[in-house]
Amino acid sequence: MEPRKFVAPEFILGEGALDLVGRYAANLAAKKVFLVTDPGVIRAGLAAKVENSLAQAGLPFVVFSDVAPNPKDVEVMAGAELYLREQCDVIVAVGGGSPMDCAKGIGIVVSNGANILLFEGVDRVETPCPPLICIPTTAGSSADISQFAIITDTARKVKIAIISKVLMPDLALVDPLATLSMPAALTAATGLDALVHAIEAYVSNANSPVTDLHALEAIRLVARNLKGAIEHPLDLGFRKPMMLASLLAGLAFSNASLGLVHAMAHSLGGLSNVPHGDCNALLLEYVVAHNFDSVPERYVAIGEAFGLEIAGLPRGEQKGRLVEALRRFRIEAGVSGGLRELGIRKADLPKLAENASKDPCIVTNPVQPTVQEIEMIYERAF
Ligand SMILES: [Fe+2]
Image (cartoon, rainbow, N blue to C red; front, side, top):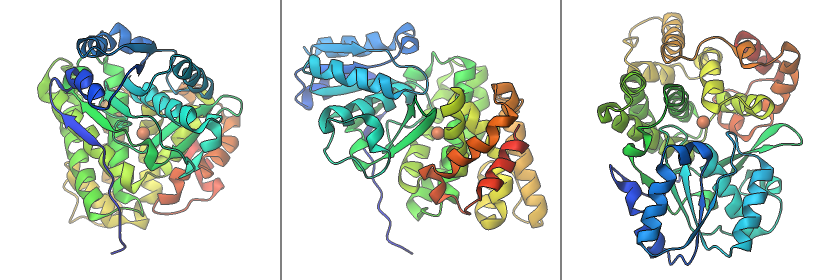
């Protein structure tokens, strides 16, 4: 076995973890906190809970909430300008993947003094960022656990991936109570994102026994709890295992990286601004069908964790049963149709395929597809 590193932030998991933010920001010697969030999180009353905790700890703060779904380079740069003008020294992000990724981008810009787009790729950030506390309000993005930030290049209409150990938050406060207000569509999209994180980490060619453990348990938990979380949004009996699934999937993919589904979803999200989880969910079954024969025993283990009894079946049947189960699962979660319904045009597919082939997530896919093969997968998902 090749030597493999496993990096994880300090995290606190459990109901009420969010309320500890003031105390922990004070522990990080904060003088003025830069709070990154978005309008939806403010409406749900979650930003106010963070503000109360900071106020109770006697910490002044500045709120930055001009963050759209799929955070943009211009938002990162505007946030960084405000951070510097207000002389903040600790960043707190509360929200889904978008505010957390934007906060990471702001951290890079304020300490490295250059445009965010210059840091695209793996290990390109030289100076460490200010201390960062992340509080996820969805069960899926795992930006609170990961060393990834995905930012949209608005001029080129592509998403860039920034992967660096300096992006690992100093602390994640993982509180299932913060997910109770998620509407059904967001619960579905983010939960399916967590499933894809776990599957891609498990078949990644950078997998390890430690990431495998987290990935398989995450798959098991999503398979058994996502539907319940969608149908019974206030039931912690479903929200708690979904939050745990997201955390475990994050630990797996932050270390084993991702694969072709994410490379193709990033390309789609850059062009069309469709929610990341929906892009993933629509592509997953087609990428599994494409990848299956390169690591069949790994996909059989995924199927078994998902609740299918396929271990003793012939290969072709194993593949068919897994692909069909994944398709049924996302449709039952409310993600039906194809790329056409997301507003993608047939004429976009060649460009989408070319962009996906350059995404750093593709490097760890178990088999390297050609640009033509990627275009064919997009066509099947159309
Ligand atoms: Fe994702």
